[in-house]
Amino acid sequence: MTRKPGRSTRGRLGEGLRNAGSWLLDYRYAVLAQARGALARTHPDEFASGDRAPVLIIPGIYESWHFMRPLIDALHEHGHPVHVVTPLHTNRRPVVPSAEIVADYVRQRDLHGVVIVAHSKGGLIGKYLMTQLDPDNRVERMVAVSTPFSGSRYARYMPTPSLRDFAAKHPDLLALSADERLNGRVVSIFGRFDPHIPEGSILPGAENVRIDTGGHFRILSHPDTIRQVLAAAG
Image (cartoon, rainbow, N blue to C red):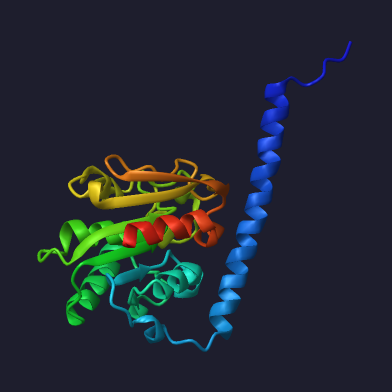
Protein backbone atom coordinates (compact mmCIF):
# COMPACT_ATOMS: atom_id res chain seq x y z
CA MET A 1 0.00 0.00 0.00
CA THR A 2 1.37 3.38 -1.01
CA ARG A 3 1.05 6.13 1.55
CA LYS A 4 0.14 9.61 0.45
CA PRO A 5 2.57 12.31 1.50
CA GLY A 6 1.62 13.82 4.85
CA ARG A 7 0.89 17.46 5.38
CA SER A 8 4.42 18.12 6.57
CA THR A 9 5.88 16.60 3.40
CA ARG A 10 3.53 18.57 1.19
CA GLY A 11 4.28 21.67 3.24
CA ARG A 12 8.02 21.30 2.79
CA LEU A 13 7.59 20.70 -0.93
CA GLY A 14 5.37 23.77 -1.25
CA GLU A 15 7.85 25.88 0.69
CA GLY A 16 10.71 24.62 -1.47
CA LEU A 17 8.87 25.50 -4.67
CA ARG A 18 7.95 28.91 -3.29
CA ASN A 19 11.56 29.59 -2.32
CA ALA A 20 12.78 28.47 -5.75
CA GLY A 21 10.36 30.91 -7.34
CA SER A 22 11.58 33.66 -5.03
CA TRP A 23 15.16 32.90 -6.04
CA LEU A 24 14.37 33.26 -9.74
CA LEU A 25 12.47 36.50 -9.22
CA ASP A 26 15.31 37.76 -7.04
CA TYR A 27 17.91 37.35 -9.77
CA ARG A 28 15.54 38.89 -12.27
CA TYR A 29 15.46 41.97 -10.01
CA ALA A 30 19.28 41.96 -9.81
CA VAL A 31 19.71 41.71 -13.58
CA LEU A 32 17.22 44.51 -14.20
CA ALA A 33 18.91 46.68 -11.56
CA GLN A 34 22.29 46.19 -13.25
CA ALA A 35 20.78 47.08 -16.61
CA ARG A 36 19.05 50.13 -15.14
CA GLY A 37 22.35 51.29 -13.72
CA ALA A 38 24.12 50.86 -17.05
CA LEU A 39 21.47 52.75 -19.01
CA ALA A 40 20.39 55.41 -16.53
CA ARG A 41 21.34 59.04 -17.06
CA THR A 42 20.15 60.19 -13.63
CA HIS A 43 22.88 61.65 -11.42
CA PRO A 44 22.64 60.87 -7.68
CA ASP A 45 23.04 64.57 -6.82
CA GLU A 46 19.50 65.05 -8.14
CA PHE A 47 18.22 63.42 -4.94
CA ALA A 48 20.24 65.54 -2.51
CA SER A 49 17.57 68.20 -1.93
CA GLY A 50 15.02 68.18 0.89
CA ASP A 51 14.34 69.57 4.36
CA ARG A 52 13.90 66.39 6.37
CA ALA A 53 16.56 64.12 7.91
CA PRO A 54 19.44 63.41 5.53
CA VAL A 55 19.62 59.81 4.34
CA LEU A 56 22.84 58.05 3.43
CA ILE A 57 22.54 55.16 0.95
CA ILE A 58 24.98 52.24 1.24
CA PRO A 59 24.35 49.41 -1.25
CA GLY A 60 25.62 45.85 -0.95
CA ILE A 61 28.66 44.24 -2.51
CA TYR A 62 28.90 44.42 -6.32
CA GLU A 63 25.86 46.70 -6.32
CA SER A 64 25.43 50.13 -7.79
CA TRP A 65 23.11 52.58 -6.06
CA HIS A 66 20.47 51.73 -8.65
CA PHE A 67 19.69 48.53 -6.74
CA MET A 68 18.19 50.78 -4.06
CA ARG A 69 16.39 53.11 -6.44
CA PRO A 70 12.86 52.23 -5.15
CA LEU A 71 13.88 53.34 -1.66
CA ILE A 72 15.77 56.38 -2.92
CA ASP A 73 12.76 57.57 -4.93
CA ALA A 74 10.36 57.11 -1.99
CA LEU A 75 12.64 58.85 0.50
CA HIS A 76 13.24 61.81 -1.78
CA GLU A 77 9.54 62.15 -2.58
CA HIS A 78 8.91 62.38 1.19
CA GLY A 79 11.30 65.30 1.56
CA HIS A 80 14.56 63.58 2.56
CA PRO A 81 17.83 64.68 0.97
CA VAL A 82 19.31 61.40 -0.18
CA HIS A 83 23.09 61.02 -0.40
CA VAL A 84 24.75 58.32 -2.49
CA VAL A 85 28.39 57.63 -1.62
CA THR A 86 29.62 57.36 -5.20
CA PRO A 87 33.32 56.78 -4.21
CA LEU A 88 32.25 53.29 -3.08
CA HIS A 89 31.53 52.47 -6.73
CA THR A 90 30.25 48.86 -6.63
CA ASN A 91 31.37 48.32 -3.03
CA ARG A 92 34.12 45.70 -3.51
CA ARG A 93 36.49 46.85 -0.76
CA PRO A 94 36.54 45.23 2.70
CA VAL A 95 34.17 46.60 5.32
CA VAL A 96 36.64 48.77 7.25
CA PRO A 97 38.12 50.81 4.36
CA SER A 98 34.62 51.14 2.92
CA ALA A 99 33.36 52.54 6.23
CA GLU A 100 36.25 55.01 6.23
CA ILE A 101 35.18 56.25 2.78
CA VAL A 102 31.62 56.73 4.03
CA ALA A 103 32.82 58.51 7.19
CA ASP A 104 34.87 60.92 5.05
CA TYR A 105 31.81 61.61 2.92
CA VAL A 106 29.72 62.47 5.98
CA ARG A 107 32.41 64.77 7.41
CA GLN A 108 33.14 66.55 4.13
CA ARG A 109 29.47 67.38 3.68
CA ASP A 110 29.04 68.21 7.36
CA LEU A 111 25.96 65.99 7.68
CA HIS A 112 24.18 65.63 11.03
CA GLY A 113 21.17 63.64 12.16
CA VAL A 114 21.95 61.11 9.43
CA VAL A 115 19.81 58.05 8.79
CA ILE A 116 21.72 55.28 7.04
CA VAL A 117 19.66 53.10 4.69
CA ALA A 118 21.76 50.11 3.73
CA HIS A 119 21.48 46.82 1.90
CA SER A 120 23.34 43.59 2.69
CA LYS A 121 27.06 44.37 3.17
CA GLY A 122 26.10 48.03 3.42
CA GLY A 123 24.59 47.30 6.85
CA LEU A 124 27.94 45.98 8.09
CA ILE A 125 29.65 49.10 6.78
CA GLY A 126 27.03 51.24 8.48
CA LYS A 127 27.39 49.46 11.80
CA TYR A 128 31.18 49.79 11.74
CA LEU A 129 30.83 53.49 10.94
CA MET A 130 28.38 54.03 13.81
CA THR A 131 30.45 52.15 16.39
CA GLN A 132 34.01 53.08 15.37
CA LEU A 133 34.10 56.14 13.10
CA ASP A 134 31.44 58.53 14.36
CA PRO A 135 32.87 60.36 17.40
CA ASP A 136 30.60 63.36 16.78
CA ASN A 137 27.43 61.24 16.66
CA ARG A 138 26.51 62.44 13.20
CA VAL A 139 24.59 59.21 12.49
CA GLU A 140 21.26 59.00 14.26
CA ARG A 141 20.19 55.49 13.26
CA MET A 142 20.35 52.88 10.52
CA VAL A 143 17.86 50.82 8.56
CA ALA A 144 19.58 47.70 7.24
CA VAL A 145 17.88 45.44 4.69
CA SER A 146 19.02 41.82 4.30
CA THR A 147 22.29 42.34 6.17
CA PRO A 148 24.39 39.28 7.19
CA PHE A 149 25.05 40.45 10.74
CA SER A 150 25.91 36.86 11.73
CA GLY A 151 27.56 35.98 8.43
CA SER A 152 26.60 33.38 5.87
CA ARG A 153 27.53 29.71 5.78
CA TYR A 154 28.00 30.00 2.01
CA ALA A 155 30.69 32.67 2.24
CA ARG A 156 33.62 30.33 2.83
CA TYR A 157 32.96 28.64 -0.52
CA MET A 158 33.02 31.87 -2.49
CA PRO A 159 35.82 32.40 -5.06
CA THR A 160 36.84 35.92 -4.01
CA PRO A 161 38.19 37.25 -0.66
CA SER A 162 35.61 40.05 -0.68
CA LEU A 163 32.83 37.46 -0.47
CA ARG A 164 34.67 35.18 1.96
CA ASP A 165 34.74 38.12 4.39
CA PHE A 166 31.10 37.27 5.20
CA ALA A 167 31.99 33.88 6.69
CA ALA A 168 30.49 33.56 10.17
CA LYS A 169 33.90 32.95 11.76
CA HIS A 170 35.75 35.76 10.01
CA PRO A 171 37.49 37.75 12.79
CA ASP A 172 36.29 41.15 11.56
CA LEU A 173 32.70 39.95 11.43
CA LEU A 174 32.98 38.33 14.86
CA ALA A 175 34.28 41.57 16.35
CA LEU A 176 31.50 43.58 14.73
CA SER A 177 28.86 41.12 15.96
CA ALA A 178 30.21 41.25 19.49
CA ASP A 179 29.85 45.04 19.64
CA GLU A 180 26.19 45.51 20.60
CA ARG A 181 26.45 49.06 22.00
CA LEU A 182 24.39 50.74 19.29
CA ASN A 183 22.19 47.86 18.14
CA GLY A 184 19.20 49.63 19.64
CA ARG A 185 19.55 52.33 16.97
CA VAL A 186 19.23 49.82 14.14
CA VAL A 187 16.16 48.55 12.30
CA SER A 188 16.95 45.25 10.59
CA ILE A 189 14.56 44.32 7.79
CA PHE A 190 14.58 40.89 6.17
CA GLY A 191 12.36 38.47 4.27
CA ARG A 192 11.03 35.06 5.18
CA PHE A 193 13.63 33.49 2.87
CA ASP A 194 17.03 34.81 1.82
CA PRO A 195 19.03 32.57 -0.55
CA HIS A 196 22.29 34.30 0.39
CA ILE A 197 21.85 34.44 4.16
CA PRO A 198 20.27 31.22 5.48
CA GLU A 199 21.18 32.33 9.02
CA GLY A 200 18.89 35.32 8.67
CA SER A 201 19.41 38.98 9.58
CA ILE A 202 18.18 39.17 13.16
CA LEU A 203 20.33 41.59 15.18
CA PRO A 204 20.14 41.28 18.98
CA GLY A 205 18.79 44.44 20.59
CA ALA A 206 17.67 45.96 17.28
CA GLU A 207 14.16 46.39 15.96
CA ASN A 208 13.86 43.30 13.76
CA VAL A 209 11.19 43.42 11.05
CA ARG A 210 10.25 40.40 8.94
CA ILE A 211 8.68 41.13 5.55
CA ASP A 212 6.49 38.43 3.99
CA THR A 213 8.53 38.00 0.84
CA GLY A 214 11.47 35.93 -0.36
CA GLY A 215 14.77 36.98 -1.84
CA HIS A 216 17.84 39.04 -1.09
CA PHE A 217 17.40 41.86 -3.64
CA ARG A 218 13.76 42.32 -4.58
CA ILE A 219 12.80 42.97 -0.96
CA LEU A 220 14.21 46.45 -1.66
CA SER A 221 11.14 47.24 -3.77
CA HIS A 222 8.54 45.58 -1.54
CA PRO A 223 5.84 48.05 -0.37
CA ASP A 224 6.20 46.94 3.26
CA THR A 225 9.97 47.54 3.12
CA ILE A 226 9.39 51.01 1.72
CA ARG A 227 6.86 51.78 4.46
CA GLN A 228 9.24 50.57 7.17
CA VAL A 229 12.15 52.61 5.78
CA LEU A 230 10.04 55.76 5.55
CA ALA A 231 8.81 55.29 9.11
CA ALA A 232 12.34 54.81 10.45
CA ALA A 233 13.72 57.76 8.49
CA GLY A 234 10.85 60.00 9.58
